[in-house]
Image (cartoon, rainbow, N blue to C red; front, side, top):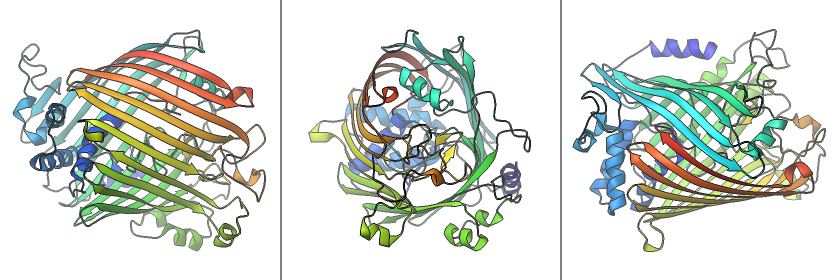
Length: 563
């Protein structure tokens, strides 16, 4: 409640005449179709700082127009993508191609991207249906897999000062067996919050609601408040902040000026739940809350390099220490959290680190992240495997139009996370929300290699293949080897001699191939195959799964469970 009241107060402080824009919802395929052209150009552009997603629609249009003027949209598929992105944010591009040739009932789909719209000086409105209908089979489940999502999406502006976005869907699903297995140990749906049983316990039923308001405080300062997700990084995974966990209440301030992009983010998260129907606390009448505050500063250096630094702190008013005051210290947008934490004598969990992107040459980009949870240099030098030397490393590369083949894009990525990273000695300090990791879906104590191939041989056809190979050290009941972030790290198995992959060895190979055809603007047909091989001496982690599915999507991204 405090974060909502604070945000409403700040929103009322100042509204200006600067043009407003909503953000394009997070969608892996959509954002790759934007980012690939900067890599293709071989230099960083000031329109968008790609390490922080989502992007404003107005910035996307300025970004692709700049790249189009530089001649980056060359092939037929490139030209199609440029037109698609222009049409998707036509209120800023004003592209003539956004007009439909045959509107429905004269008043619907007059624009290719919108079921209904209002385009007035004082009011901009876009209304669209949302649907996801799919079915499939799983070699380890007798029940047929399916997904049934219906809802609506609305965005717009008032007086070109205040932007708004709303998204609401009702969902019923029968999930793949490996997701169902995970839910048997941790009864939450990946990416989602509250849920209930469906089809006599064989499926799940849940609502998803996201939305926000946003305005430009000045030409270079944007304020956003709402309930949604963000993603920090240029990779397939994020070790800093990802969109894996459910949407959260947030207040975000962004300053984009000169070669700098600075973000202050405050999130209200769910500390814990007890299954889908329980977990209410007597003190609050609801699930206990915790908060995350983050600073991320990104700087363009020269024409090819972007470097970002961040600090993040997890804190709560409900922890076992018994404090009952919201920590106003962390609301200061220009501080060092570690210093404030020590000054308060608190046990809050602080992470530090950096990320980078180097567009080395045309069509080739390197990126990475480093996250430091805690360490002592003497223990690093001695190599004694001290449990509190906790950190995570990511390194990756993108190769656009690989080997001279237009629209063939390759990506490789390595992620390494030490045992006990992101964990804490209270539920209120670990880096989870609604019992799900905020960063990488595997939690900690693993090595991972990811390979991705994307190919657009025809304008409306996209082929995506992924191969993920991971070695994970799993925990068991009553034993904490540093993989499960929900476990109190004071129950660690050993003080020294800790190494990545310790505990119950689990070798995971995950492969998937998806062919997607765009029928009309934002209407897609997906045919996909998933092959998952999990090997371990423990029966629970020793299984093989094959999944095939066919789905129709309308104004919604693919629902992915890639772990």
